[in-house]
Image 1: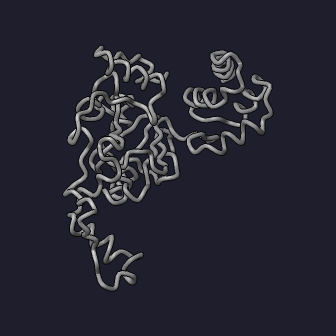
Image 2: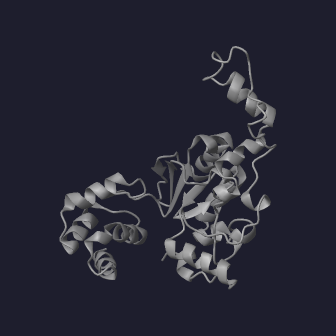
Image 3: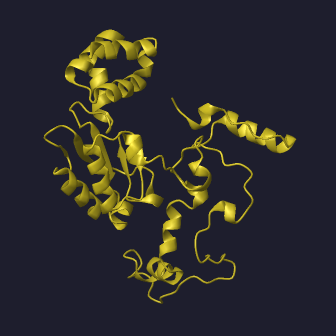
Length: 275
């Protein structure tokens, strides 16, 4: 463990301002950040131990206790619940013989809850050893646990599948549709427009006692709400999809330069992969 701490700190040239990167790399190697490990980081960086401890305790994904060789963080947001998160969680628990918030007795699998992970359009979703798994079902949850028990790697569990269309490109490896694809508003597409309007203006808990005349706005100056939320590229031509939230300034400049000159946009490897 001491060598791991020394090697990681050396990788970042002993720069204490890179503490987050150092902690992430060490936890990735050791599985957790024990008191002994924190003490070694403190000595190696010549940094107060309390500064490291407060960072570790503040961030949800840092842990001072072992959380299993395979650590499952299942999103427990309201959207996940709407799409069957409860059944998926039950399947994970039954297959692992372990409740959420605990690690199996052999230390192989840990099951934990986490807040929204940005996959609201592809729920239920989970982070397993830093990899995103989306559109989970009870059957797939049980299969994942079975393959963990057989010793498969996380990449093998995932099957190398990423998002649809251009998101599946090995350079992008993206699971996120983002707002340009509809994002959270597109969840409305599963509910008829009439029902949405009635909930918003007539039956919702914040309006049910206020709209006595039961009026749904229908002024000709108000744009009509479409039958569904459309992704941008179905409405207007999109020249480039730029990764990032937001994309970095250099990437935006290169995209504009490509548009003006008619030259292809050459995105560097670092844009898609953060080592």
